[in-house]
Image (cartoon, rainbow, N blue to C red; front, side):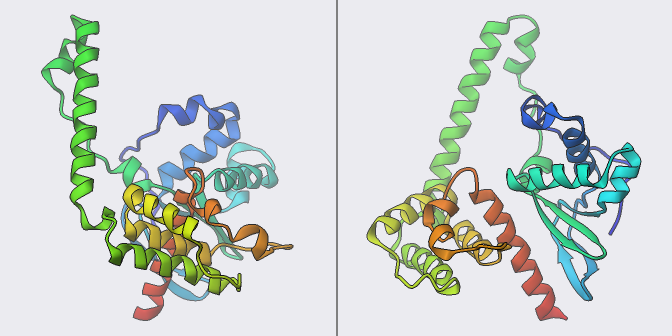
Length: 255
């Protein structure tokens, strides 16, 4: 897996201002992972098998970074787990090292910059007018995006999409032997999330749910709840787990 020494990355200001910026090790780790992550799909040997990694993945070691920053490996581990628990990355550990996959890498790192418009240029001469123009432009883009999404078959409340969502959720229930079928109230939530994220993302998140690491004391009655997966805080993490599981399946099939 390549380590990159040139090029550039984007860092969200909110990340630095909010919790990550409150600790120098958390900030250093987050920045280092962004800098070292691969920018395109790659192949590695992981636990004796070839594996295809999505963009935004990086293999590293707690001791490797600890020596660089002159701190304890446990300090690096602590903040890596924090980034994992807060949905910034997904960690996988094996004897050869740690694999971190950055959530939403494609969205944050490959998004093209908006072209410089006349109203944006006028910020230098008339801040109030320019800011108002930019605001209206953003609102217009948002409306167009919502309109386009409403026409996309993936976001439609068709009977096919609802049945696919029910099947994906019930597969999670069966996988964990939860012993019940989906409820009517859950179908309403599934419908809202089809409109919000699309059926493909929903199915991928439920695939991720089935591949979540389970520690001691795991009890399906406590953990297998739809609200746990369909929440703004956790959905992206399960979606990323699903993408990783899909890539593992793909690499196994091609092996």
